[in-house]
Length: 396
Picture 1 (cartoon, rainbow, N blue to C red):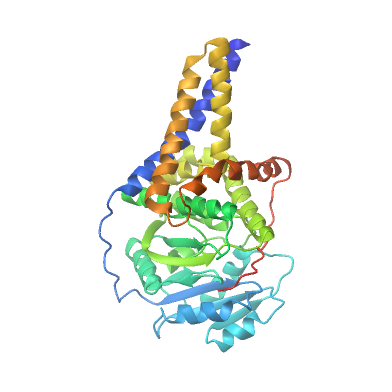
Picture 2: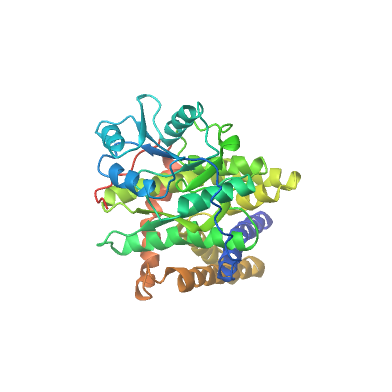
């Protein structure tokens, strides 16, 4: 029995050490100087920007006007007013966008809206499709830049998807903003410097038409973007990160909006980690598919709060076993992993997170981690499976 317990503890510590080691590698690589961005070609082909919008009457005019500044006369801007109960369609049309309305209360979710929009575009297909969420602002030049990379590489391209904090953001939201920065900038930037692909992030995604027309988007998966990127990686057309392009949104200001958003993202991520990551890792190894292997390994890095909780449990359990039973190896692995995790977080904050979180506010991270415990308990007991739009009560 003692040997079995030792083996379980050792395997658990090693299983935690691997994603922590990859996280540290990504952070250290993100510090490296990147190669200069190639100039954006004017001959980027015809671009169609696809905007899925559900009850976005407060945002859609600003979004349409912002996107129009980045488009040429030959490009298209299509808004899919999906199951809307407000004036989203009329406002978008009045602002100058091409609009199609979709009404299907039984099939709700962003994936269905995207599929509907692509089928509409198929009658006069563009060369590249760029997907932007209806609550996002695009930095000038970003549409052409990300579209040009997608066409040049014949693979999806992902802009930096940046989340801003509302003016009165509290400590929990600031820490969430730092975690977002690590996930959506630091880690993909580290992979980019290593010549590896990135996960798709949901907004600011560009696809060559020849790829996206074959994709199966019509579902209500919680993280349809993550799932789509892994599918493209399986086909050896893994997405590429384009940090010079940027789309920006704002965290919900309400506690209910933040809770809904975080639960959807994290339950979706954990569901993918549990359900498909081991299979994709094996497939990547078996077929020597470096892109798929890299993204499957990246998928195995849990949310930072869950990783911190797991590391704490591993350190406590292995240290207790060391004192009482003399089991040295699991304790050494756990403490080394804990140090690596601390270095990764500190390294990410030092270079990329000081504008989000002050040094004194970093001391609140343990309380934030405890606040996330119910989210992970709910995943085990009653996993979120249906797409739910986050309540946004502050509009830019």
